[in-house]
Length: 159
Image (tube, rainbow, N blue to C red; front, top):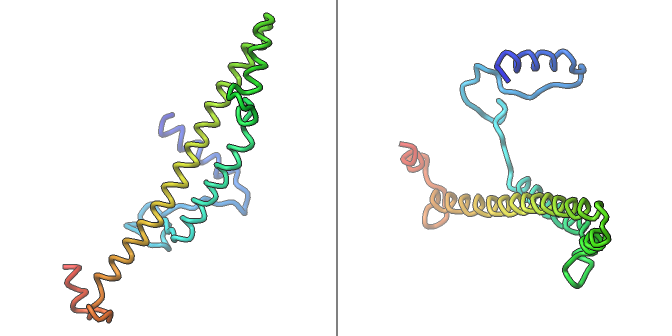
């Protein structure tokens, strides 16, 4: 897609927007950021909540997406894959198609599960790491007796 095509698509989309729809964006001449100018602001509670939801999604997908039937079958072969093998053994082409469907589906489900686990683990790690960083910073800007550093002492950190 060329730049001109992109600009044309953006203009077309803007014309179709309802009066209640808007796109959040930072002004082109903005020279930096703050929460008021569109920068991303994330709080630890938000990270924890998103990580938790990713874990819940992981558990739900794992429990509900087992079309192979491997989770319900003690042999590990999976009832759907056994059915595919049985259909193939009788010369029915649908057996091979069913086998391919289960293989592709299982691969896609595994990818979704890996992505959910990655998001959950990463956000849990980030939340814990930022909490540790906050504790380290808080300890660094306090006197030995726990009182706050003076402004002149804090100013030395920024020189």
